[in-house]
Length: 379
Image 1 (cartoon, helix red, strand yellow):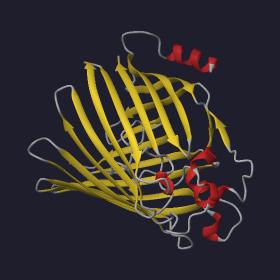
Image 2 (spheres, rainbow, N blue to C red; image 1 turned 135 degrees about the horizontal axis):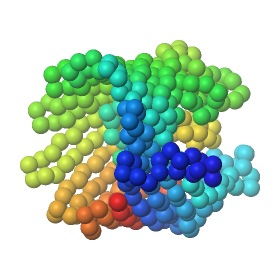
Image 3 (tube, rainbow, N blue to C red; image 1 turned 180 degrees about the vertical axis):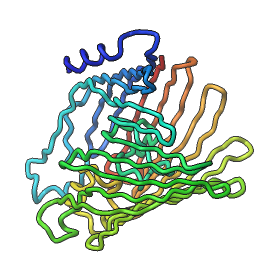
């Protein structure tokens, strides 16, 4: 880390060319479940920088410093049904400790040429048109409590080739952190009337659960994927769909999402999405293997069928509120999340969220209730 700081200060001294901005964020959370509770939170400082060079290359990135408070050692087994654990974890423990971090989240260079732009380094990459789920985004995972929150950087090289009005080609080669290899995505995007369309092809390594291929371990299988997205408007309603599907016939790997939204004359905004994961556990067939696979981070859901609903309204110029409902349609567990955002000052926002589940069973229902308080100040 000391070496990185020396390199950073050498490359980007405090001068008029380099622009700095960012925010301070503090969050406090509490989760109640199964007669237990976790109280935890963090303080975070993010500093973004942008350094244009005389040769036309722009260096951008951000440094994050994050400290944690409250509960810092987590027992994953607290979030699983007891009957699922008994055969393997007799002591009831599978723990992970979170430590304070200081890290370079993004650090990339961008150069524009006559016919294309190239971006190399750890960079933000966001694919797809969905809000809560993005099947096309093989680089990121979203938190359903806060789908719009920023995603970590991806080590990649990206080529953006404009091909006319609303038309272009993206070529992405990214490093896979789980194995010694790379993943590639090719995306063609264009506009047709009031709709935006993408066609996608990818070659990637996907962690396939052993019980789906009659193997004894979780295996990273190299596979080719195809997919695409459509987003647009019909009358006063926005609609979108997104799909990503493996061409490998040995196991059905793929996801799709369907969504729509509308803003009423009184300012109330409503939105809904349906998500399907072909590789998720089927109703009545959920076991420990499925939970471990979901915790691997390489699948966007535990089971197959989910729904996400949201409504928001601005009460004043400074106070807005929203309600989110998301649920697992396979085990009938749902969460209800009201939230209030208050712009205290021009660059300071306070958010309060409460989460309540509809049941004490099912994947979502294991967490009975939760609170979140977050304040963010931009500079």
